[in-house]
Image (cartoon, rainbow, N blue to C red; front, side, top):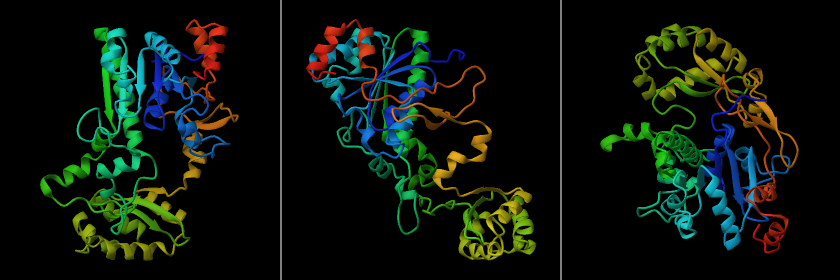
Length: 395
């Protein structure tokens, strides 16, 4: 049996869909929390239908919903709402990312719940926050990337580009996760629950700190530079002679001299006035790029990386996303395991961080409503009551 986990004994109820809230609660489950995911009867979380790439299951859903229990409730029906209220009376945390104002209209706002459940931590996740002029605007991930200025610094000089992952949802999920942990720690001191409010715009805005300060007080923003660094050069992808791409990055003048000497085999280039400081290299990056590509054209990617390693220059392969499942470092460290699912065993990455005192929970991905009867029995509903709830489509 695994050693006790940090959140063993903590019960989380989640009214969640898509990515931000499920990512928060999955990480709580990783630490041992019991997460009861409330879903719509029949269809469940709409993220279940985003695609069918993981052995018939949705890639998004599989990623953020392992180790949870699925309880189906039609919260428009009073009997189903009573089930939820009974559950919250026993819970430690409620996480929700319903439409703005929806929780309050259902009697599930923090002020309403704290009167009945003073130890309950309530975490609301929304696009723009619970007040302000943008409160009721729809807030999909790409829209938040736009509003936060992320697109303005991502892409090429000719065209902005969104992140290839749901970065605004992920940012919000991470801050919700740490916010809940902070609230649980505070409850240990005060005995009282609290309200954690997370805005996707504010979460991604925090991650935009560098470009915001770079463009402070009307200064020009960092230019979009594709996969290259906006202000350090050479730092980015370079093609080798075999058509493969190597990512490399220089950080200082010592590395620049080593790069010229051991990688390009052109030591005199280090003193070229066009390239003798980072600002000069950045200013003349097209000329330097041509020199680098000409030198790399005679080498394959492996030879380029060997020279970079010899010169102690940071470098990496540009992997396709599918190659991450077989990354030699992840495999060597045992970071890829299997979890169960309605479609059978699936590979899964262990959560980041290796803890000496416990192992992360890596339980199954639930089917829609898989745990409904068990949770209802736990709340005191007998077989007849469950049959009536099912007959009225409340569950």
